[in-house]
Amino acid sequence: QSALTQPRSVSASPGQSVTISCTGTSSDVGGYNFVSWYQQHPGKAPKLMIYDVNKRPSGVPDRFSGSKSGNTASLTISGLQADDEADYYCYSYAGTYTFVFGIGTQLTVL
Amino acid sequence: EVHLLESGGGLIQPGGSLRLSCAASGFSFDEYAMHWVRQAPGKGLEWVSGISLNGGSEDYADSVRGRFTISRDNAKSSLYLRMNSLRPEDTALYYCTKDISGSGSVIEYWGQGTLVTVSS
Image 1 (cartoon, chains in turn yellow, green):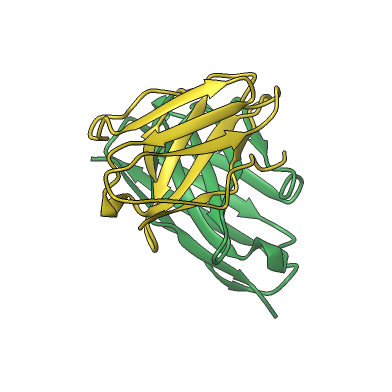
Image 2 (tube, rainbow over the protein chains, first blue to last red; image 1 turned 120 degrees about the vertical axis):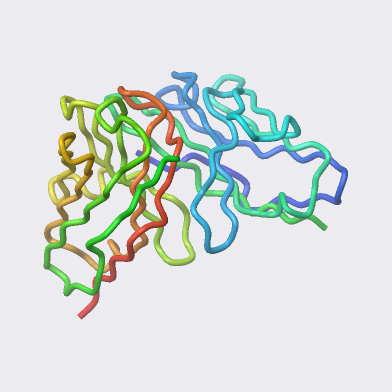
């Protein structure tokens, strides 16, 4: 149960796009379409942004999108806004009723 | 509105035990899988344990297997985590979370967490 690999930090300017990767193995990310993404602002509980690789919960702007290729999933945020600055975590089913998070990525909006 | 209220955290000495509770409301508790997730101070999220809607399936992170036990009482809409042989590295904010399905696939809602501090 090793944590999924994410870049520690990414940054971009308002209005630009940014993509955060999440790399696992064929036993987790690559083996199932149960990849989700969470946004966490400091001192707050995480919020679901993307689930089942590319589905958006009600209320999440369509600026947020997800995809997957092989053992790597990605979260893309377009039209960056100041409030998008937060930590982002990927999460995947890992078989036999176990789950694993990514190490987390700190997004800075310049 | 979904509401998850954790309780039971506190300061405990290494080797001690604690039982966390989570009172759920705003949804049909017996139709969804539930999970515990923790976050050490200044660190990332760690999935700890999950249990299916009827308790028939459960599992644990390797870091807690054999020491922690998850359970649920659907009649009381409550989730529990029994933590034994606590270690300093178990210090974290423990979140009660609701899955999007009955079998377990996506964490949809989070509580605000209860803090567990393991220290002498």
